Image 1 (spheres, helix red, strand yellow):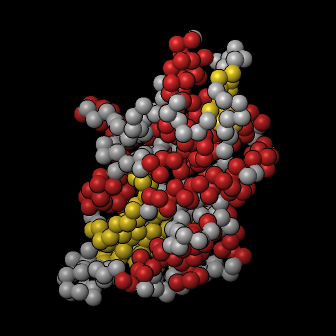
Image 2 (cartoon, rainbow, N blue to C red; image 1 turned 30 degrees about the vertical axis):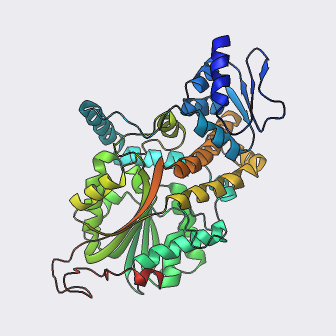
Image 3 (cartoon, helix red, strand yellow; image 1 turned 90 degrees about the horizontal axis):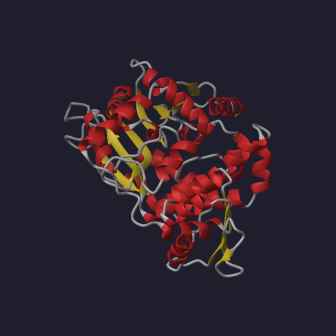
Length: 420
């Protein structure tokens, strides 16, 4: 074991944060009073650390084989420096790609998607309320000004989406994967649209229905418990938004997803797709065990594609991209705000989760989310994953449609209207 300990000590010399280790024998390694302390109950966890498999370390923490002490931001700085390479590297061999596509297709039936969404979003509404903003916006905020709070930045994001879509009173607006209803209600109350939201989460569906009723918006806002694939093709909308949803669609279904969106959009209409994208060019989950951890504990069935592949699938789906914006560092800041909020009330979070399940499972959920939020913030900072807003149109097929000849849509081909 001495060689393993020496290897770990050598790795820790490159880490900018002082780290102390408590080994299975009781031996202490590292400076007293270190900012980060790692306690190992078995040698395999130490070997995982020596190999730079930080996803495996995360699993050991969730399963109580490893104890982590220290501020989450410092823990993540240690994790980033333990990697032996970039986690965006992937196996690009053709048969690997074929197997991944087959796995993707099998993982995304309507029934499995519903189960996977409920696994994540139906953990507990009260748990999410502890660390999200008051509107429960569970997606990347937009820090238009550096001084903005999380709540202000989330409202700025909601308004940015509405302005990019140039929403007008009376327009039929669809929100695919509407979450806890923040965008749906913002669009209805600030832009006067007739709004429809869909979700696979029973908790979110019930929550939004109560909000709509309490605000007296029943005549022009509705929330449906519905898979986007099952929407009646005869229902068309002037504008569509999909925020933080297409990550659950799956690589094998992406063209079909955009094709369905196109069929629900009236000719000349606009759609904004806001979602997480991969940092690596080749389709595949993050390495170093990170992707495996997310798949097991957080987002079963979640898949990320590079923006270049997303745009290709969007075009195959019949849509024309007219504007794309990268908000990657905005999501890092958003996630750190969520992480800081959760870390500040761990006891309350444990109580909330314990009221919905047994003590063992509630402890695992809390430990998993702590690492998920901090690890995701680090991943966006490092550029391992990204966040893109893609504005697209369904061409009308008539060059006379639009403010410019050949526009074939309501998009003015001028960004000034967004920031005016």
